[in-house]
Length: 94
Length: 345
Ligand SMILES: C[S@@+](CC[C@H](N)C(=O)[O-])C[C@H]1O[C@@H](n2cnc3c(N)ncnc32)[C@H](O)[C@@H]1O
Ligand code: SF4
Image (tube, rainbow over all chains, first blue to last red; front, side):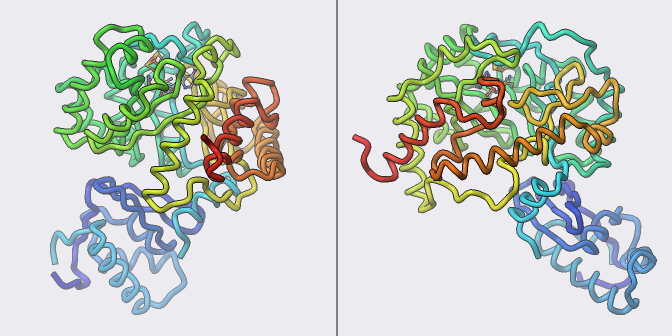
């Protein structure tokens, strides 16, 4: 499913995450795979609740980081694709 | 982007609390002859609400790994409630258990309600005679094996842990074979430690030099098969280990320690919040200094093998000084070097 501003994302239930200073650690319990992600990506993951769409997530992060909207939207789309490919996230609605 | 190993080094170097081990209770359904727990520990046990508050605080501090141990953690009356709450808070839950109570219904409940990332289960021998001799509970080996099949069927991730002793040192190969049967790792600890109260009677069960040599040979062969180095390079960190720099352990009455082995209290959960202890404890600051000193001390030994054989917590228990190298470190590092240099016969 392609990503769009209205895409709804959900974390897989086996995902555990934390921050270690300015980066995040994501563990996939199912197979023990660990990912280290940057500060914006871990914040993005923290905000995913299955209710906010990509556009709303962009709005929240825009208030927290000094970056223009289109750059942030591109970054989030990239993080989302990457995390989907690692079975961290899935798309629930588009 | 950093690697996970980089992040772990950062937790040690910057005192970022990453793992907390909770000894929920010292009650146990087995009675291991060499158990280090202080069974008659005095004090007020932490209540359910104190644990829940502690969990919230630890999670807010960024703690990732929550290790539930004991005694036998499943013997705590609120084990499932606490486990489920820890899961809700997003901890990576690891359980240290003797496996005795993990029959079908309990194991199923564990998976459904707690969903641990891993369970570390103690194995004391490769046959009932040896295992039951150590646990002092007849039938415990057979029951454990039955339970391991159940865990496997349920898809619960587990590994076996074993302390090398004089009684099981002739069964090393058979214990590895048993672990292989379940396709799980078996991790040996070759150091029998004194009891937490300093009583050295467990040391009577320490393995012989022959037993230690046998274990090291197995480990070396295994590392060679995996084409990895038998001894690791010293990590580029300031401290010797994560004790008090990225880990803590808390006993059933709320005493906080830098690690489960290093029994020097740095505070108590009844009196202070965890954040306060972690940031302000003077005892913890001096432990961190000792940890740095221990690393320098070990590097000065000039032996890579010695590095893996030392534990500041055990040193503290044995001699009162967390940086003092104790005799079994010298022995184990000598045996290790013999094996690396192919001079062991
Ligand atoms: C105290 S037990 C608690 C968890 C659980 N009851 C169990 O036995 O796995 C934790 C681990 O410590 C090990 N242990 C107990 N007494 C020891 C001692 N004196 N020296 C070294 N390890 C010890 C046990 O074999 C077990 O692997
Ligand atoms: S099962 Fe664990 S806690 Fe119980 S007596 Fe044995 S080592 Fe101690």
